[in-house]
Length: 381
Image (tube, rainbow, N blue to C red; front, side, top):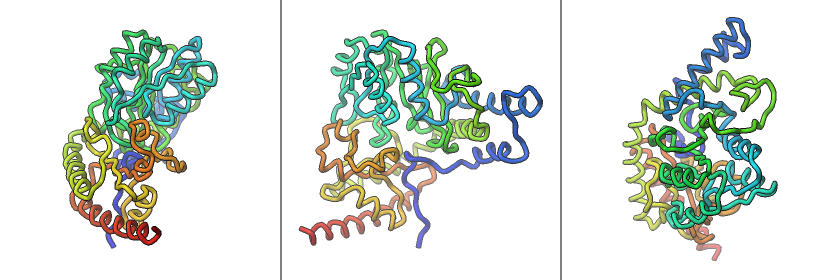
């Protein structure tokens, strides 16, 4: 039997050898608290400074704009709740397809007195320009729109959206977790005021991330204590994870061009899926080069994911962060997809190490799995 094939890179990615090597130093003979003044502490501080520089270079930001966190969930919570804590409750606008780490804290703020304005998207998953203009006319203090959707891979025109938000007097934040390493991400050129990143989506370790934030933005910390990370994220730094994150950023910049080949794999996969009668969501919009979100009508996504897993292929039925929930994809529902079809959705997210042979074998396994599942449905009818 062939080795299992991993096709779920939007959920997490394998730890890159360079990131592992950078971490091992701080998991073995070397250690230190970066707040200490002695040589052990100075070496730890130098490692964090290097990682901060590597993250900054990956997104064209200044190192002083990098706030290390435990991941993008914390980064998203920090920008929403930290900014809200410095403001009188007003309007907060988010798109209808945000990750739960944005939509859930936004709902918490709504319960605390903020007005939550959810901006509609079109059938391809792009922010609806007319509804966005209406939302901005309500004078929001903060707007959050993700750069690339974790399920469909659909890309938003972040520079244009950010410019409109600035003109309306709002701080604009983007969750760029899925974009980093797959397309060019430029904090400065995009015009955003804040951006969230995650380590484990780009070959770095789990448990590390960053909020990139303009130093003119006032935030209240979620965690109070020793004042690390410019006073915005107290707590002794996770030195090994931060070092791995920095090296993963350096590697992602170096290898970004490899995603051109990944796009060829995605196109081949989509062509075959359409030939089998599958619906590809968001296919009419610009998308990440590695993501395919599809459905075969009448075949439940969870059942197909389980059957493919037994065939040796790891795919997903949507966002990994929502995999415990049996509900249909909120992203697809926001796009106007019928609930029954949304329950059939399956996501394939490719990495730079996947091959045409693996895609071909996946399609063979998919054909077998669909035949078996459709047969079971026919028997039960």
